[in-house]
Image (cartoon, rainbow, N blue to C red; front, side, top):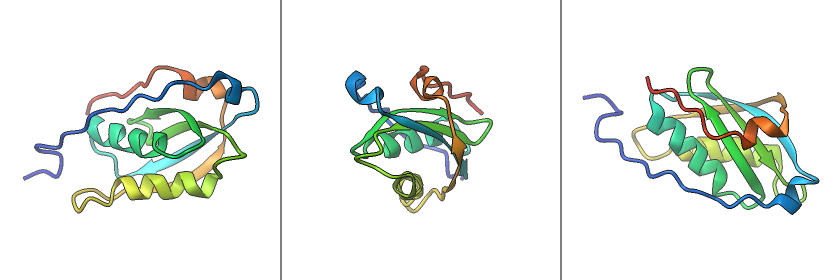
Length: 116
């Protein structure tokens, strides 16, 4: 049986803090281990649950997430840890690394999650 069979994920929504966006930074996070759109939703949820993460957009086919964050409340190593933790359910395993800076707009776009 595939690890993605009967895999349910409810995407969380987080209101955008427009004031925090004025000083926000954004990065691209490379993500390995996502096999389906539910994996991408799990990664997105894990990042959005961090205090200080303002917006996330996951690009499944590219193995990439763009993350807008408040640098006064969260740092890039915490983003990597959140992605790894999102896969620690016994059925998934995600690896992540910071790729580099990203335009804020990439994180604010509606999530583009291409089904596999």
